[in-house]
Length: 142
Image (cartoon, rainbow, N blue to C red; front, side):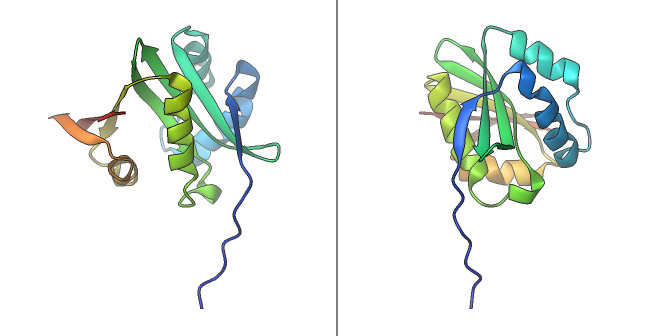
């Protein structure tokens, strides 16, 4: 018999400067080479940045950051806390990010060695465009 997975109540809101410390905890748990505080701060100060958080109660479960230019977004970073991965939260955050950005097309770049991210993006209907050395650029038209 399969264990029952209880759905969790989630919410979304804008990722703001005061959230960086919570996000850094997740970033450091999830990545071997994490973004630092300065990179998050720089991104959040860019007026073309659209950044979102996903929550359960008052706990930050993940975040996403994209740069928007007109109707196109470049997804810079998306991450779910390792304890909450593989529950569909990344896809929900990705969809929310695209809606919040108000874009018609999204681009990402991912390392060929990042099999988890490649699988996530393929399952989110992004299509490969180009490959340069160990980086694949993918896109999705909405």
